[in-house]
Amino acid sequence: MERDLDKKLYNDYLNGEKQAFEYIYKKYKNRIEYFIYNIVKDYQKAEDLTQETFIYVMQNKMRENSSFKYHIYLVAKSKAYNYLNIEKRRDEINDQYMLNESKKVDKDVLEIITSKETKKELLNSIEELDEKYKNAIYLVNIEGLSYKETAEILGQTLQNTKTLIHRGKKQLRKILLKKGYSEMNKVLNIFIIIICTTALLSGIVYASVTIYNKYIKKQDEITSRGLFDLGDGITTYETDLMANDMTWNQKPRLYHKIISNQEEYDKYKSRINELPNLEEINFEENFVIIIANENIRHLHEKDLTISDITADETTTHITMKQKENPDYNNDNNIWYAIVDRSLLRENADVSIENRKVEVDGCISADELPKSYSVENAISDGCIVLENNKVKSNNIEVLDEFIADTERGEKSSIRVYSKFTDSNGEETIYIKDVEYLNGIYYFNNYNLKDNEESYFNSFTKLQKRNSSYGIVYYWIEEDENSGAPFIIIQDY
Image (cartoon, rainbow, N blue to C red; front, side, top):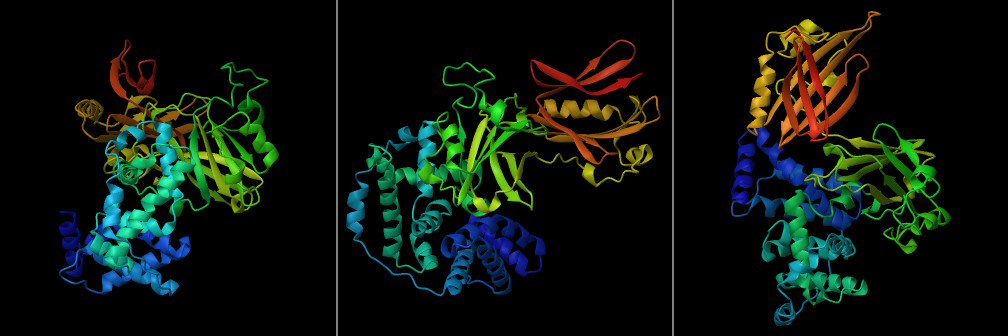
């Protein structure tokens, strides 16, 4: 089905439908970059060769009896090896030997990866595999290509492709045995289970961090309370490393600590055993970032990860982002990353990249001019309030919005709210709400200051009538928290 759709879109593009190729490009760009990167070991060159691959595919028609996926990976391989101008040495191994080895595999491998910590160790171990094994296993087990197609793409014999996959599994077993996993007779299937599960659940390739966060050498979450107490569960000001030794970032409500030498690291390592050992860091080449939180996080701030690290002349910028399929029960509040020292600066800051609230039929709030008026908002179909009084004739849209969301339907709404204080000072807020998958995402944008006033997420929106002609549209994150979304007087 997938192959038929890809080929249809490709043929539609050849017949003049340019948008068809945009879909293919978005679907395959990251995958092709990852595949090429594993060959050339140069992120920038992988980007360039990916563009060359798509240009070639756009300009040269593929064979009729080939799948599009096979064709584009074959072109990508050609581009990568033309760049390197090298040939791979081929080894062969007896098929029967691999078959006999595989019979040792225990089919009940899922028991090994039920624990969160074990799964983390396995994923970290996969990242330690030799790169030559990753593409073979990636094409067969993630992209679903046949051994024959994979062999042709990699420029290997069919037998050698099977050998690469087999040896990759064996190398993984050795890595895990060194880490003390005595059950690793079962490991030949673990690799496939984990990378396939990760790809299916998250929608991304497990090694995407290698490409898109090329300066992040390693990262993980911390579950112990070592920052706060000495292991006895009692937090005091004297022993709270976070309060005393870390830097506070106001807007994301997160602390951070930059560690660039062994002495500082030893202090944190003595309190947090989950931090990696020194030999994994090498402070001549890397530094460590620790991010911590002491506040209750809103829904959109739960299950975060360090998504990007960049630097300008003076500051290292750390960006946190919610995972693609967040676990809203995950209250983890400490993260760390080992980062290339080239990004170390005198200052550092932390931010959270929030999802963008999209309201049907409306441009983004940050693209509106400061001169955007009540009349403009009414003309654009917004619900318009001035000093809590309704100025538009569509207030019933609010009730319709609530009714739609109570039925679980994806929906969105925009409210333009203007206030004038006793000194004649005007403030205009653009309040956008989008309901998606059981959650209301709320963006409050200050038009005068051209900045997001706050971003929030909650699970319930309801209408509450009060005396004196006042109506509250009330938002709640949970049973114990709530606040008015908007207040309407003389409704």
